[in-house]
Amino acid sequence: MTNGYVRYASASDERSERTESSFIIDPDIRKARTLPARAYSDPILFRAQRDRVFARTWQYAAHDDVVKVAGQVFPFTLLPGALDEPLLLTRDAQDTFHALSNVCTHRGTLVVDGPGHEQQLRCRYHGRRFHARRPVPFDA
Image (cartoon, rainbow, N blue to C red; front, side, top):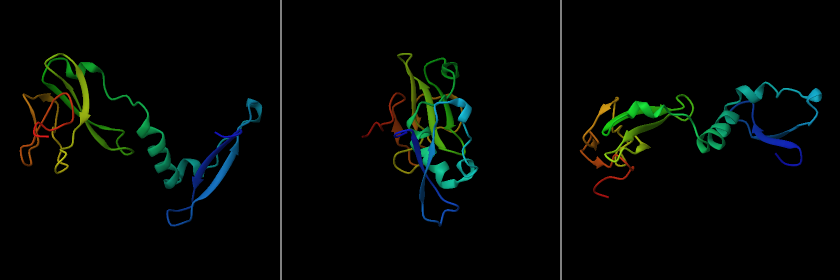
C-alpha cells in the first residue's frame, strides 16, 4: 500500500502484457467496494500472491503430536495446489521438533513417502543420507 493505493499487476490472459492497476482504500467502511472479479481469477495475480504472500509467511503444517517420539517422521505437502512444497516434520533424539525439505538435494526424489519411524533419512534413489534435524546430507 502506497499513499492509500494498493498496486497489483493483472492481465486478461497469460500472453497479454501486464498492466498495473490501483484501488483506492477509503478508511470510511461505508465507502468500501469489492475488488474487480479478475482479482479472484487472474492466473498472473494468483502467482504473484502465491510468491509474495504465502511463500514468505508462516503457514500451519500440523500439530506437533504427529511426531511425538524421537525418530518419528511425517511428510506432507505445504499448500497443495498453490505452493506444492514437499516438507517433512521430524523429532530428533534430543526431543526437538524440526521441519525440513522432503526432497533429496541430488535428484529431487522424495526422501520419505509416508508417516512412520525412521532410523535415518535416506534417499531411495542412490542412498544419500540426511540429518533428521537439518536438511544437509551427511556427506556434505
